[in-house]
Length: 393
Image (cartoon, rainbow, N blue to C red; front, side):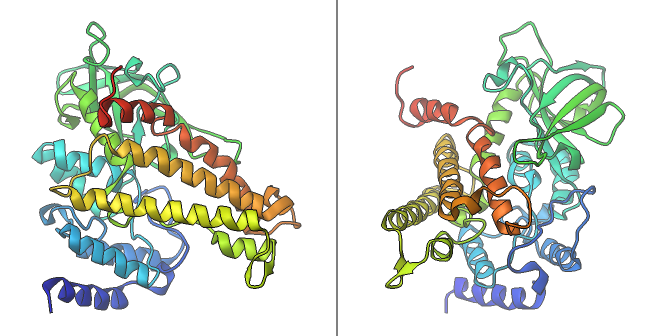
């Protein structure tokens, strides 16, 4: 028996003993936020046990609390978790964005102060990038950070700050030198959200939710030891973090996230009916099959990208392909589900619609933004053209 087979048996036994029933199947996933209560005690137990084993960050180094797994071992862990329907013990920008960035580009002090709390699920992070006048042209940002010796004083505004109302810390791009070309005077720093100089205002969207916020800085403080990389050289750090965001190792190793919500084929059978055991509408049946094939091919491509890489790091500009196409798949799925449900796919509220139908409508509306945030799909196409395909400007 190979060592990988031994590892699989060990993981399978561990999961059966340590993953509670309440952490299997759909449900809440811990984010690390001190501001979001954990509803089910099983979720707390699952987080604590997984963190102790290093399975909240399975491929991170053990000295910072990670699991120290190889890519092959991580793939086994994901397979065994899916076998029993185990949810991820922890999710959020800590594990998917700032954690990998600090491990790659942070100082040893930054790693030891910030990585273990992320692994233990004790902190939630948000991203301070976009501003009212700096969205797609992010390098035009105006939020200022003035050097005051051992700290920076920050003034300005960020917008579309995902989860800022629940975050404990922010990683942000700020202007530290206005007298140089715009890409050169930017610094990447970390700051606490729990201070008097930070004000957060949630933005209500058409979907009825408020996942995004406006964030205002009025003499907020960031310590000098929380500058990642060099002062005025934060643009490269910010770009690298976006590559982690657009295609995290967990998503890639697992072949991409599984579809959220109801199975399309099952929904079509329920709302449209069947004929000789098949979805009764030929056109819908073909579109469901096409979507499932495209989704499966996309997952295999993501996984192959990691397997062909020489190390466990997130790939570079190719991640823009995953962000762009993954977004289009996500939007196509939600639109198709609404179409399958007919008029019941347009329910906003009321007893005429069940909870899943209302949620589906709101998800469909909310996902219209997916091709804009985290870098619009138009920007991703430009990156693919220039950095992946090598086409001229």
